[in-house]
Image 1 (cartoon, rainbow, N blue to C red):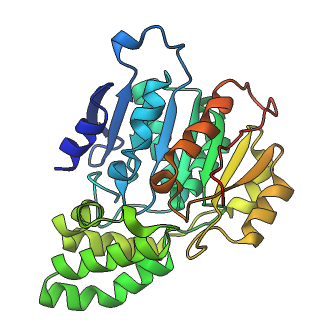
Image 2 (cartoon, rainbow, N blue to C red):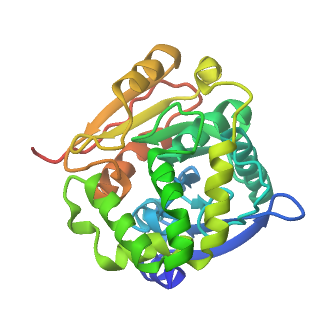
Length: 313
């Protein structure tokens, strides 16, 4: 069903979904939207990599994919290990360093880069790590209300873990859908986008294999990185831009984290996006595209600023 929904919104682009092996046992799901052949008059843009957080997977970027492809950017959503329909191994390494390295393996396999890497939620921390661990694959980074965290484990995951015994005993479908819908709405400027269908799509990968989802959350609780991201931010030479939803700050990046980025990154700028909460790619996909376009014209550490189209208050 998710694939059908994605296919519907990228009908004007060449759409594909692939499963890329990163180890003999594990695969990551990649959804791509390529500029349509009849759009040959559109100037070819740099490739764009979209990294989701723990929930949403490729579906969460369904509004951004066709907009970027229409502007000439080959666009790829890479679902990290344990997210969406990528592998959910119980004994996998779910540290954000390992997640970044796996994304690098996928980019090598696809022969994609240097690319603009966009990350939401903990996907933002993966994008930052990729920038210094695989700098030849990253020309710029765009963070969507996410920052320099060292664990994908969040308060939401903690709450879900407390519910895990109940979910196993009583059945999960209705509980998970309601919890997800409430969490999305609570973090939004205008929760009208959180329809029952959207909440169902966000919940579906979790419900599809509840046991595996619980094991992944447990592994995320235990996962640790070798070095804090903050200690490595100075190694990032590429431009880094941050979009912060101006409304409803529940669960978004903190002001202390923004200050760390500003003090340690060589080329950094933050912009508020009006009419959006934490899920900027859902409420203001136009702002995401507006931030990507000037980064696509930039070169390594060029210092060009991303300009964000803002809606009136």
